[in-house]
Length: 421
Image (cartoon, rainbow, N blue to C red; front, top):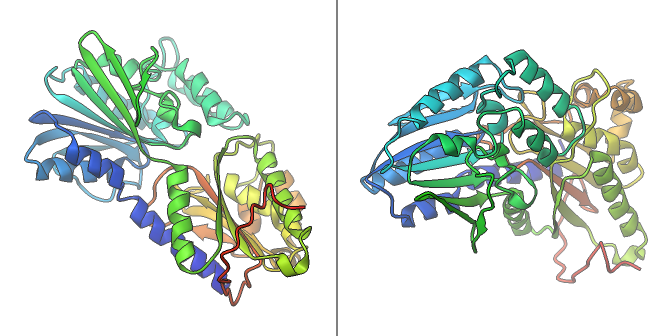
């Protein structure tokens, strides 16, 4: 890694640690009036940390609590007093998903109505928390989910299909419990933070929710459900941008959530770089551009890789035409479809490294084998110990020297999307 790469990755790791303290979640729980006995259910890739923080706040308030944490294997970092930790499969559900979900369903159905239910939802819940619809077997459900993951559909489209196959999704889990007050706090990995899409909405009623200033409210039959998003992709990019700005870098943030197919994001990044080349040489200021979202890929090859590595590899040839350009693709859940792979990077020198290793990137792209190609030149990013799940973050650096990144102190504003001649 060059000095620029090390600085960017170190900033990313620091921001990941800070982000995973979920300050909005902690603040909301500190202010919220809760029943003397509150039940906790945390589901998803960020479940352990969210539950750990919540349990600490409730203990500090002197409130009793109990409940469950359901997360992916390897994402629990120890015991949490008062909570039982269960595991489920991801990205595909498995037998363990069903066993853990049945335990939680049995518990939900027995909860006293006077106990508040605190639900902590994050991405990955769709695979971990599941009971198949009537007449559907586990092998059939796994096959249908495999087809969805390789289909090229975006997450909203996939989760819409998943709800049709489930006894828990689409608000059905909410219908199973009797708690008069249900509080849902979510870490969002979807466009527009749609509560029907996050985790396939197990506690989001199918009826319309009333939108409030900071979330959603649902009332039915004497029961109340409050839904709040406490962290999302843009929050993370703003935090990372602020951190890099402290190092003197000029950081631009595209606030859109990328949910179109990956090829469109690739075209957008290439277009941005082409636009910068139209400027007069003396006015070409270096910049970093932060983008984020989930860009579906229709997989047709038999290789290994994920969205981040595929995007990085597909742009490596274009970056070779430019000086001092680099692209970092981070999987914020620490798994770019391959355990231990937290994403990938390429820069202006990567294409020559492929040549030295006698790797032909177009073949790897065609076979969807980006992981193998980038691993051969040590361009994969390790996953931080602590991860969240707000989907992918992309950092494009252009104009900063890779070995000696000297951030220019320039206050001039430039809109690279609209103001170029």
